[in-house]
Image (cartoon, rainbow, N blue to C red; front, top):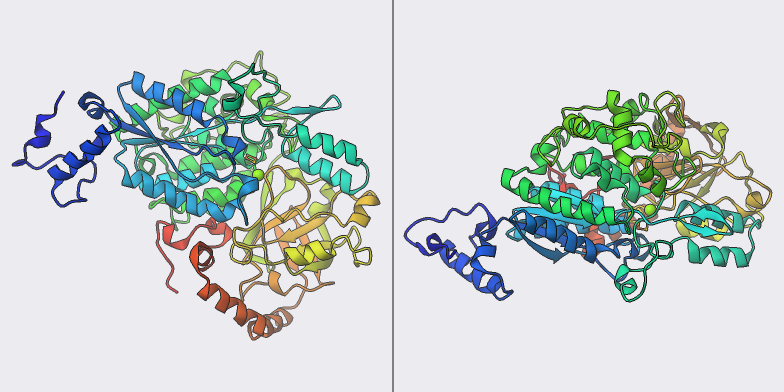
Length: 616
Ligand code: FES
Ligand code: MG
């Protein structure tokens, strides 16, 4: 199948697909193609193979990333799906981000990964791209980058891990990591127990190593955190956006179903490439309304709010249109009950969700609340997807995916708060509150200036704190502590925990893990480090009111006093040193601090949004 027209130098080349994409590198398009073929043939491909649609597969395997341990198997299965359907599959790497091995935080690297993803999809001659990811920041980073690159993209998640077991009780990363650590801090769990739990919470084994011996489902726990944390939330949201097969959100990492989903994704990629189904053409505001509906119904991670806003703002039609803002999450939340009984809002694990019918069962249940005309990557609408796969209640359990008539929480799992303490908004996951009385609470602030200050003083026996205090942590916002660490779940002072206190109202400009729970106000905007931030001028003893029902976060201080404190702070040497430091910092950290926008905008770099950079 030697392509004669490739050598017909008197005629212009049609350069829209496959190896012919973007042939401008050497001025002479025919020569550029000729040279490209020299090097791709060095990999052993024939003219026949090279005449097919090229499907890129993003490989995010890393030996530092247990959540992606099964990526090699997924690549193999996806390639099978591509090649059975007449495409040519070529995998390539991007960076790999694991939550625990991403100093200072994985969120710090999310935007870098999105740039890597966008530029590699643009740079290489792929007609469509399967993006394999899973761990928390990976899926949003890939969708952000893929949406900006705007070639057909097909997210494929690694899938959740299986739960472990300790003394006959099921446990799983990472809600049980946090609960048990809190129990250990409070003295109700001894050191032997906490050490043996450590082995079982995510006893991940790479299937690559397991290939050499018999694999049992009990020991093979590669995959993402097994509760409704950020990874699971983003997987469900990706399916709700129509970018992924519905079963793809929940099939366990180690299941054979996961491999069949990979193969199906390969087939879908060839079809999407042929139809040139780009993400900017598929995703509309209705797609995002569906995603937010699902987010509320699953009691999903607060991080997903930030990620979704970053994705929305990458879309030229939606960026700055006002169609989707923080307020949209609250408006939709008022109509959507929490239906999924999974940790941290409920009791169970992702495997239970999958066995109860997963996203298919959930979307059938939510059907009256969804926009069924939203398009999917497979070229049919969400309504048509649901019609093609009817859902029978029996024999699925309705304990895990509740019917609309019997929800776990009536509405508004995630609530948006506003007030003088957070003019740009703040988020609270009301459904994960441990002491729901605190959802309407007024108390005196105990303020920590930053994470280091917190670490130094939180367990001080002399700390002036009671269970009615409001713990305030400053300077962990996107700029203040680059990447906005998941430090918003401020630990309870040990003396109170030991006395039996299990929850307190906590307020910060940071994030918390999707697997965490408590009465915790997050993403306060503007963040404390900014000169206009009221959070930044809160002092010990100031009275704070949080009322989730009324959507209020208020600092009980007169406007004149607030203005005086802001003015005083603006003139402080601390503030000018901080500004100097940010303006002169080198490398990615400097780029990050100078360019990141606020949480309600997605904590993306302003120059990556569809609107482009802000003038400075
Ligand atoms: Fe990767 Fe939880 S650490 S999903
Ligand atoms: Mg997490």
